[in-house]
Length: 296
Image (cartoon, rainbow, N blue to C red; front, side):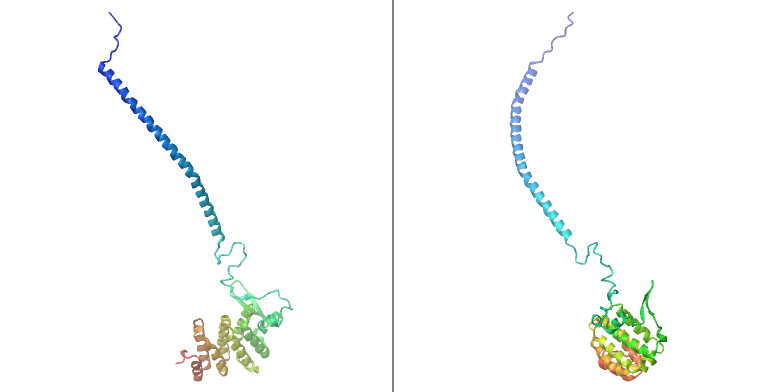
């Protein structure tokens, strides 16, 4: 028996199919090679254009970054005028709470002359002629007297009251504070009326200084004068009636300003009640026509 396997013979039509397939593949490969060559050339062209455009974009990015950094640096340098830089050592409460200027506490006797003070009161205080000073505590601020007000002699009381009335025009601390507080405490004394009337011309001098304070341009001085008029009226009552014309003329000049209308009406009510004279109401309405009486 012949054990060798016969050679495999492919049919003639299959051989033809293989040959035709090979022949059909040949032109495809050539066309693909052409396409690949054209695509490679086009890609090389695009790469060339890209390489030419990349430096421009980099330069643009560099310009943008430099401009943004410069703008950010200029913006960082620009600071709002109300914002103070850190380390300026400025008090936060300066613009909010410290509305009054402070005098130099280390002033010498040479600088304590009358030329460097607005009124006689500040020069007397610097020379230790005013028998009171401010006492600061944790909760309040009050005056500490070397001699209590109730133990003062009538002449010393009247002289000090005149000086305090002049000190109402002071605008720096502690003079303005001490003058207003001392005037208030002295007018609140039980025997203030007898002491003022016992000194000849004391009430006239006090009213003259208050009238001068009314003519000051500082609004705080005007408010201090209004407070002083009410306190003086509570102290001397009807004794102030002969001086009402001097006071009402100055009050009437600012009676139409909104900042003072409420306080002016309160002071005028005090003057009318302490006087008890119907002529006082007529005097007030003659100077301030918008006044509403509390006695009617």
